[in-house]
Image (cartoon, rainbow, N blue to C red):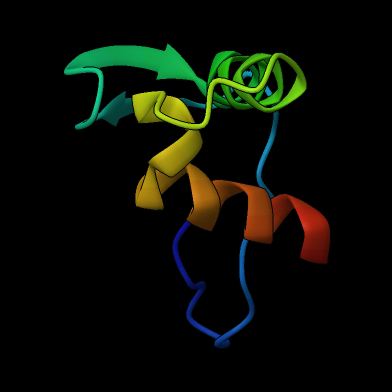
Amino acid sequence: MNDNDDGKKSQIKMETPFYCRTMQADMSVRRCLDLFVEANAFGFKDSACFKCIEGQKIRQLLAHD
């Protein structure tokens, strides 16, 4: 999820692990996305995953790949 030396964003893979500060746990990008989609689909607008800024950044990176 970091910039490379040439300034381009590195590709993000679904199984890339990261530490989620919101959930205070290690998880994969896939799990983060699944939790957001579940919260969105079932209308859990107060869910921590729905409001997560870190997850939003991950979704934006995926959208640009």
